[in-house]
Image (cartoon, rainbow, N blue to C red):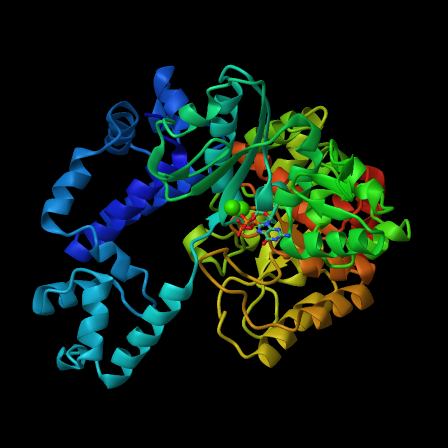
Length: 575
Ligand code: DGT
Ligand code: CA
Ligand code: CA
């Protein structure tokens, strides 16, 4: 059974949760959490590394013990240590941890004193007013838990795009090898490059008598078959991800692709255009009366309603149809347009490679320049740089630049924006850098007014270049802080500084609509990997997805500029 990095990371997370509930040593708990993070940010499948006998202890956060557990998981699909934990702590307690307001200590108490193991039991106890009998759990906490449970139930489960991809690509590759299978396309929100994906919608075209439908449900990651027929089937993978598969005929592939790519709102508008021309459009084709007049390609579907091809990322009914009609569709940016990266970390703060290794990896990723932007001192958990260490790093980069070929390092810092909007390092040292990347790492709970004022003050600073992950959100984990983003975009325009589109798949910050707003206001964005290791540059592809959903063209993005022009733009922000 294939084991993916996400499966391994999830097991490490689960072990950390269970150990925490059990009251284990906090350092042990943190080791598992770090390992999970490290596994998630790897650019390669661990299963392959195990198969080729590579030394896993070279990976950040992975010691001998964890390496052995990874090998065990890859070889057997499970970990004995976790099974042992399950004998002490019921696995369902983990679900309780996902309820806001319930930390490990409270979960432990609920279990020890009220025997609560599941969300149902928790809801029942809360409704019966039994929670408030516990020390530290007043009536208000009880109500908050009830509210959180209701919110939890109504929340559909979604997957990060990057996680869905880990399941989609091997499955699509596996389907392609089934006899008689011709084309396999993952449609739906996945094809539109959405930051999260609800389920996968796969279309296949086949020659007659292909066994694809019979085989599909036997894919070894299938945990449950919801339905299966002659031309469509739905399954749930072990990861919980649902996959809908449809067999379509080659002459209606374009119509089916268009239909199942969506979005639904876009489809409805296209169908309406068809109706105005007396056409019926569905997943089988474009029809005038009984006669199919288009549908073999997506181009033909659009052409039937008088439109040029609209890229999937734009199909959200956010004005793309009018833009297409008027010949105003953007020429969307592509990965190859990126010439550099303006945000990454080295071992000096919380990265796990030295600067030279990062530089070589960036060159390998096809980049011409890379800004080293380690954290500043205020972020002490990341060993942020103080003035002295930053000055040393500046010298180190000067020396490296003399030696390195094919890549130029820029000197930067990811400086903390303090609560009051001041920057965490003095002007005298900031003045010596090529760029200053500012970021918020604490006080997420300020009012919108205060948070906005904080950002505006930072951006007004004479050495401020670029606002990193402007909204602070973590997808599926943490909401954006309250901030008036249109006001921030306006301030960037007035000040002549830049905003980041952080390409980490968990951030994708700015979000698509705000990217588009920045483009409309003429504020260039920088698509940055925020790499913490040499694998991190692969994340740029996720940033490009998001940029395309934000209608960005090459000319809207700062780090498509060649180095000379980029330097000029950066100097414009530095005093
Ligand atoms: P997701 O899975 O929640 O991330 O989002 P989608 O867009 O993949 O939605 P999904 O899986 O429900 O359906 C896939 C595509 O199929 C959707 O984008 C458009 C099309 N579709 C589904 N149901 C309908 C419908 O009732 N009407 C129309 N016009 N299209 C539909
Ligand atoms: Ca879907
Ligand atoms: Ca679906």
